[in-house]
Length: 552
Image 1 (spheres, rainbow, N blue to C red):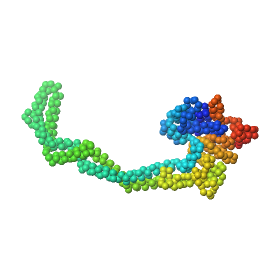
Image 2: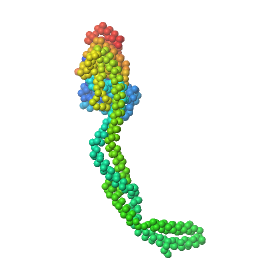
Image 3: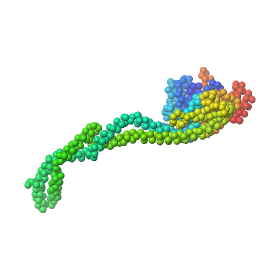
Image 4: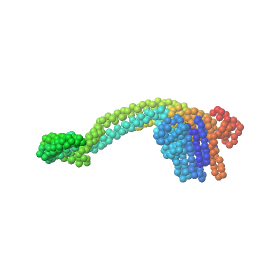
């Protein structure tokens, strides 16, 4: 709820600090005193646009700060967390400064905020019902939102919206496939040809390195054979081979070691060298035995490697990366073949529609049940508020095509009396009637979730007497469920308030100033008496005012 409002140098207000209480707060004052200043200033703190002309006199800037208690606002807490805005002690302060040159800045709990963020925060906190809000009541989308709020349908409405989005996405996928079928087929043909060419390479596509090794061996088989035999001869078979010399040297050092034990380690090294040469000779012989010319295999490798080079150049890659290209093209081919399945897309579209239709039908049932209850409640209220015999109807209009909000639009209608044709609010309700219907709707909504603070401006225009009494009772009843602030010129309404603010216009030199103050019980009697009797206040008028306050 709104707990405090601070105004500095705004229009006629030099300095005002107000604490607000729960329940019904009434704001009164003489015509022209500036009763709407408080509401207008609050609207600026909530993100409304402003001009430099709102800065008072010669002041440098205007500043408005509104503090709210947000203990029971979990959705607002979530939004603040998501926006990275700190909040402690369950209090939220929205502040706005407007320089004389028109530049303005917004803050939430001291952190800089955009006007959009101020407006978003305000949506969790309060509603201002002035002429603009009453005219908004004429729009079908607003009427539908009111009914959905009364029905508690927000969760189901979100599911319907998500299902509608899923259905629309399925429709667009199918249309895209049908529209771009030729382009997709061209890509499919190209992919199939490329994949076929790569598949013809078989396992070779992933053994490029092995093929290079085999090709080099076959291309140089003569050189390798001759080289192996020459090495065997030099190591073991010639008269002066390495092995013959190593054996002689090993024998000599063994004799020397008989006279010096330090040479025994060298004897072991020489023996090891001889053994290694022997192992190398055996390995060379085995290698040479495997070598044999194979012109047919060499020609096959030449052909396969040439094909792989050509494919690699065609696809701007390297031969060793062809297997990765094959896998990627096969995956793309699978994706396109799946996307190109129009029948599967049609089935997915039908399935998405079935989900949407089921949820939308459930939403329609919920709305129709709530419409009966809301219609009865509003009808009873407007008949009390000088619209005797009038009947409030909620009419459902089928949409020409499915929408994210469901299968119907909602229209509020009023009939002059039961049994007579009803008409849309925009056609049959005057400004005063519209404001009272708005009050009746808000009273009906008071028992369901919504913002905790409501502000009414001009809700009692053009009424008096018993109707004013009814409006006062309605506002008082609404104040038992929500915090309500109302600007009024009717004593019957003002007497119902649990808190009373008065706006007065004062002169200071050549300047006019608006002063806003909280009235104590004695001052309330005087203000109600003024509203009853005008400039001349008698003892009888004061007694009447006191009686009204006691009755309220």
